[in-house]
Amino acid sequence: MKRYIMMVLVSLAVLSSISCAGSKKETPKAAAGAVAWMAWDQAMTTAQTEGKFIVVDVYTDWCHWCKVMDDKTYVDPAVAGLMKESFAAVKLNAERENTVNFKGKAYTEMDLARSFGVNGYPTTLFLASDGTVIGKIPGYIEAPVFKKILEYLTSNSYKSMSLDQYLSGKN
Image 1 (spheres, rainbow, N blue to C red):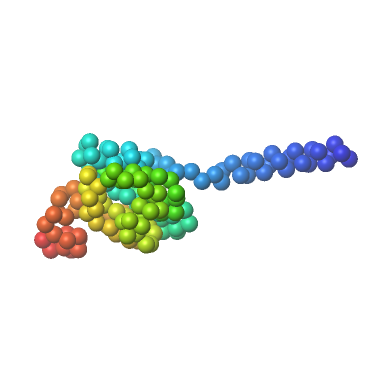
Image 2 (cartoon, rainbow, N blue to C red):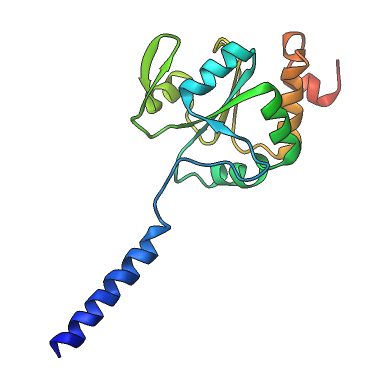
């Protein structure tokens, strides 16, 4: 009987470890053809040295629409292609205490999100290569619209017209 109980306990332990193995929460990784996310410091350095814009995806782990953006918008080939070409992409978890450096100052991810005035998720920030905020869009953005926003930035149209004017075609 003791041997039987021991076998059951060992079996339960093995099954438990197998079922929990896939539940570990990790930093989002790029699927094939998806946006390649960088660490914060890497994105800031890449943007400055290569003259790229910065896209900051401000998210939380529990946010449904954040996951929809990951699953639909950021895997779109047109979006991923433009992002790779002209943008440094970074994710910022608005509930994390990890320290990041921005413009010579250390922040937690949570405090940095607050300093950008983020109060809903997802929020997408668009920054110039020097970290200057160009724009902030709260909420889910569908891939075709996101692509147009990226084109608005890369064409430098943001310097002469509003995003609404650009999207409506009223130049």
